Image (cartoon, rainbow, N blue to C red; front, side, top):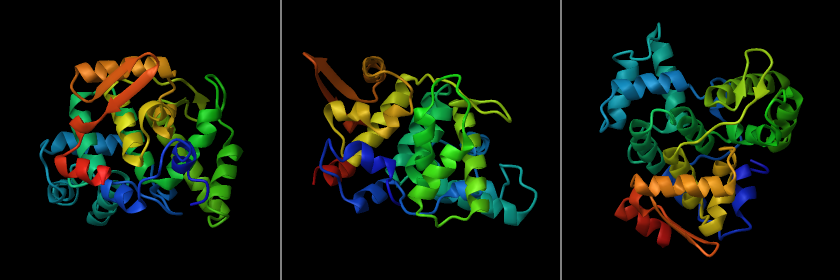
Length: 274
């Protein structure tokens, strides 16, 4: 996808890690995305993670949706489609690092769940990621201009989406940004400021770290920008996340050092360092 916001934010601060490693960790790229037909499905994700044990496997999640109908869908076909869309958005596979850490953070931080869902869906849906650009330009109290979202989508997909599909993406993305708390209102979507928790901040820093950002660059990525929080406040939240055991951070003399090793397995640490 042209002008992917991920690359625009970190390419000047660090050497990019290989795409294959990003995909292995759970990121997704390309011209297609789940938001052509779905939102971030926050309610469904909440139902699924409530239904399944904290150590559930990929097969357990699929069975909960398809066999046991934990999402309350009417037909088997709808259950299977919901399973597919949720796997696109979240992975639903503990072998994917992004989903494994999402799940850990989810059970640790009920208040932060809407932002945790948004951050993960952004990592896995290129279309949702692109719609962050007009959202981030908005000021609190400003009404969303649908045309701005259409324009960035059209440019990023190089006109591969027809008008009808673009309209669906805009409607679904607007709903997703409402579910995350960035917008409010049913018809007129008004921008409001979100308030991240320490756990959400740690997860946002993790996503930037996996992409190759380090030090001060971790506080300038797309993931931290959508938290609507100034750098100094994010650092304070990261310090709180350290006390909760999610990461390590030192901040002295204007120099920031962040380690997210606590959220990585030994194999993952080796992959990133190599």
